[in-house]
Amino acid sequence: MLDLTVTRQLLIQLLSNSSSPELGARLKQRLNAAFIANGLGPFDEKSFGYHRFKDFLSRGNEDILTVERQAQSEGDIIVSLKANISAGGPPVTATARAPLEPHPVVRNDVWQAFLNPDPARRRYLNKKTLLTTHFLTEAPEAANLEVEASPEDFVEIEPISADSQAGLMREFLDSLRLSPAEKASLEALANAPYSSGVNTIFTRALGSNGNAWRIFRTKQVLKRITAWCDQHFVSFDGLCVQPRVGLIASGLAAPTTIATLSPRQQVEKLLDLLEDEDISRLIIPTLLSILLVKSHL
Image (cartoon, rainbow, N blue to C red; front, side):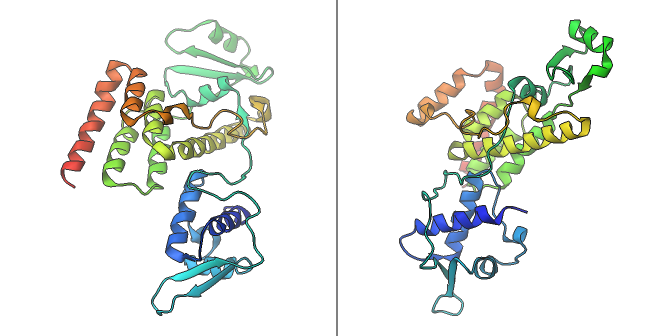
């Protein structure tokens, strides 16, 4: 279950940022957007044990909120902060973050060992040195001989498959509220054969949701790495650069320089990063799907 403290803080900040009491439906939309922006997925009152949003507000947060029914009996509820409650911090926007638990920063060689889905590549961790070693199954190298010479010192790293990584993209898309045209183009990327290049294009195509995707993806990958460490009795902290450094400090926040470019310049910049094969395999079909959807709107 999600931490109720984080949710209450978001509610306080959202209502503090409102010039007047908020309608229940509108507040839920804003809270859902804040959840997604923080990489928490969509908000669901059922995860806290309530069947309705009104019950979550009036029974689960009655100490900080006032919940009233509009004059019309069938009208929406009106939600406001109680007089003695203040934000206690900066207001939350659609792209701001609540001060959540910072994430550890995994070493790049370990991160790539788990994220590179190439089935022809074997990757191992030396349990003594905690260093990774790679080799191709069809072309044994010195690294292979090293593992064969001391198999008790090594444990194999099972990478996250391409299908699983594409599945994370689809799971994230399901949490967003997008227009049919936006969703069609992003689904085309999520359903394409996965590669790091596809992930880069997908992240850029998400626009303002790109950073939320990075946070969501990072959390899911960290869960799999820690599960692997527990299974093989490997020290997770030994695989980290700094175990308690947050995502922003680690450089995982979205670059801001591209935001200063026009949409056409952004597209041109992204195309410069791709090979002709990727453009013909991914970009052109995606653009065609967008045009097809728009023609039916």
